Image 1: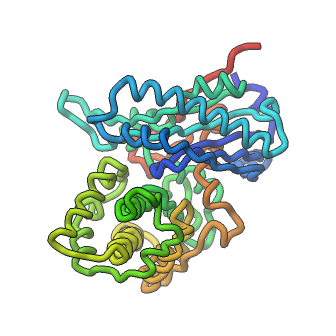
Image 2: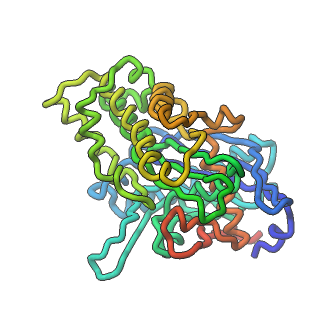
Length: 400
């Protein structure tokens, strides 16, 4: 099907994702060079297309079983396909190219439910996940073959279907003489561990817990919905960490759960944030102190994960932070503080001359490229699957 693509050493692929923060569509057009064997990616253009507020609110409705009716899910699946397609065309034009110049699209879509732990009520271990943003619509509107719905292939092999970005991180970031950590901080935090000179089976990764999700929910609550986030961590910077509340939040059993593991809005979403806010009745705390505390919780959870699960295997020299959390100065300050005892230097993607916002979208461009070529694009050492899989479902555009 993709013989012509396989015959060429350079591919243009567009990767897209909307994450757990539901800010909008991240679209990255990359040039993938396969001349030297292992693929290398060069970013040609990147754009974030924010969701309209009413669309964002309707997506949030789909995170709650009581409001996620099948008609709403079906409609939003196709609406997001249209929105993604427009974002794709926009970033292609931004690069000075036309859709005909692009070989492939890799679209993660929007996760509305992720259940990585096996459910056994019917006598079989069933794991499931739901991503929406119809790939067939994207292919039809752009005229570009589209790979979507990546996670299900790994889950069919007994994996958690997450995290997926470590596959691209292994290809692009590994070092021969240093062990490094790559920490993405979106709605959820996830860590990839690349031991020095790592082979694919040496890589491990897992969700560390909440990233921006609780911070954003608290910022929205204390502002009466006027704020989507604590911009730059400015509010948290004016507060003090409440030690009693922090200690209570640290007791969540997820933190001690051994990898492979993944989590999401089902655990650390609006219901979790609501419980935190309800504690104020019995344990009064200022808005600033509350944000300082939940910001420190995210930083602590990352360092705690390193202490529990990484340090016994390898000592890292750097933590490279990407995602929206890398712009939160208070969170970066807290990370530097909690990692200082371990001799780990905290840097951002920008410190390396890269783009924090584009990182995950670039990953799905690489995942799509491998899928089209029939190459395994999952790391069982990361997801817990019984074998590598070729993740992604391919939607072809209409024949001309």
